[in-house]
Length: 147
Image 1 (tube, rainbow, N blue to C red):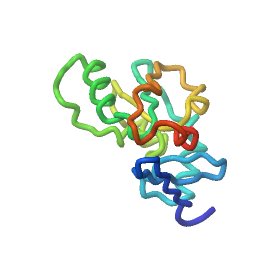
Image 2 (cartoon, rainbow, N blue to C red):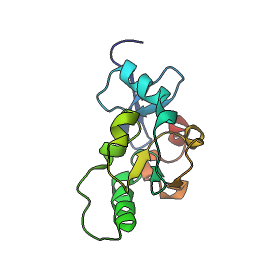
Image 3 (tube, rainbow, N blue to C red):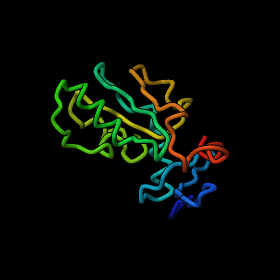
Image 4 (cartoon, rainbow, N blue to C red):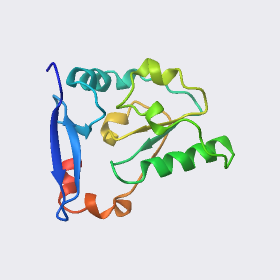
């Protein structure tokens, strides 16, 4: 599976689109400018991501306010309304190897677009958005594509 990932563009009834990378197991995830091998390697090593007692996991669907929720959870976790300096990409499971995420200082808000069934090994608090929170462009029959 060398080279570039297989990219799939999914459109909703209103014409809004999102680009996904297709992994070997059929899982689709947003494209983060990585090769197919990098995507697959990161996915296979997710269970090795070290978690700390004060970690929080934010598990959302693409386009459902992940950045917004990341900021809020980070502020609550740090007990400060000051804007968080690091971005959600620095602790995103799909975008980083486990050893890179482990270098981030505590307290951390880890985040992912992976389905909940891939997160069962994590023994930390996991927060997720609900289906009623999904924006219009991700709703209805296209939801099946993401799940």
